Image 1 (cartoon, helix red, strand yellow):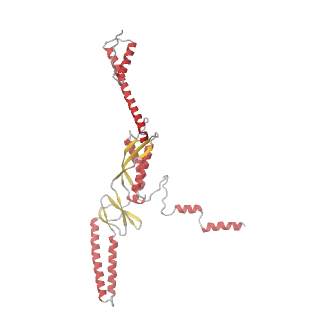
Image 2: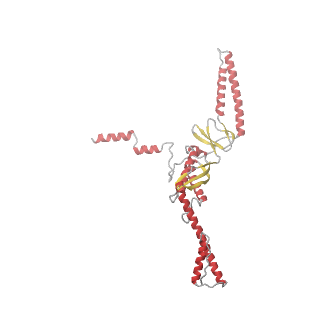
Length: 343
């Protein structure tokens, strides 16, 4: 009985790997990118390198030689065909050889001609040889690269776009509408082509994600000392946003030139309430300045009266004068003079 129970386990171990072994094998399959240590994002093991290419001068020379070879191959093929057609019943071996040589020459010209490419300024050509990355051509003009390679044109010009206006909650929980302008360019063409599906859509999504995150960790207005607000610290917030976007898109070989907040406002549902709050704050700040100025003026008036010995007042008259002056100076309405005829 024990032997019968042990036989299946031995056959299972001999016919196939265990579950842990299969899991380890799946993780080691080609094409799977292991995670970088300490990083949740996948590591991209590809970097831009220069492809073998020659400039315009050498490319024109190669083109001229190919034209000569093509003309010679066509001439040989035509002459051989004429010789063969002259006596169809007795085709010479030399004519057959010349026909084959001419056909091979034309085929060689066609194959070599696939190595020509035109790269305009501000553009690169990412070359692949049957699916294998062999380098990037940054030369401009007519270039000659290894034949039978296909190229993907990647622009290295400076691009910019404006994110959609996002509604997010700031640090205080107030809904705000915010948008930003991102200026960027491709720094590593290999990563831009092979690391992500579509790098232009990738940077748009990452920019909006970073904008949401930065907006949620700052208040709209300054809520305390040492805090950077979205409205008051625009330069600092823009620099922080640029650093976060650059960190997110470095995986795709993209470089962030500049990020600026283009639109910032409270959401419409609380805009009126926040406007009243701002107006109240402005009124309080204005009142503080008015009171401070009034107190200074009253103090100067009392000191001047005492210094010039214009009038002598007891504490009660002094307090009444201070009260009257503060009322006059701090009042919103014009005061009416009242003549006191009593003693």
